[in-house]
Length: 274
Image (cartoon, rainbow, N blue to C red; front, side):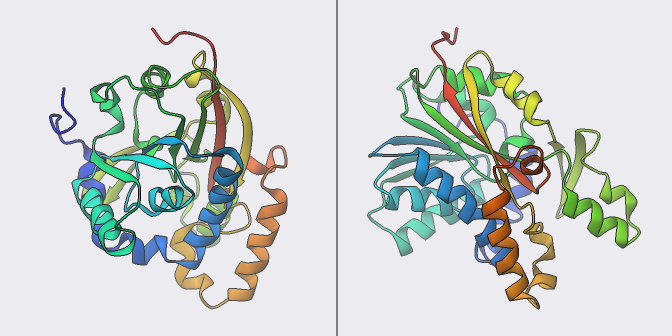
């Protein structure tokens, strides 16, 4: 199967509707930057040398361009044609020589990629929460990586203290607990998409035996979710303090799983991916 021959999925269609304004609403927002800084710090720590990196759910290309700027070659995939178009435009205008190859391909169709091994795998900010079968993702990634290959994968958490508190104070209890069941339906500009909220233990089981979980880093523990950006713009010093607290708390047991996202560092095991 070629990387262009697949049925459109709901996640891709949903994010098509967000692509035009995604950077303004998240990438360039103060909350978006604070949360992304935690991920980039970990990526810089783990991805050393000049690696061939497979990125899943690349969005508008912010992370791919950063990783390319660190000397890596990035194959960046996304299910949304509009996101890929936006990412390609950004590369052309901002970093025309960046070693990034943007491709339209949903995560569910990783089998369309050649089995050439990558040196690392990366996925940021919840794209994998929109995938139904993480076990198959792990299998496909196992077929395209060698023993010892690192994978940094960022998921939305099952329990986000900020989200619960914010919506409970506003009397919107359904939104306050929407993640707790492990599944919800998000409606993005009239397009519905299923969103899953597995626990860290669930994710580790889905990725075994091909990958072993090495560390857990909290993202957005004290820094709030991005939909609070209009409110937080009035409190820049408070946000800076929250970001500093996140840098301290992001690796603390239990607390690291109660933020908006959690960043998981996996390593490819010697188990064969059949």
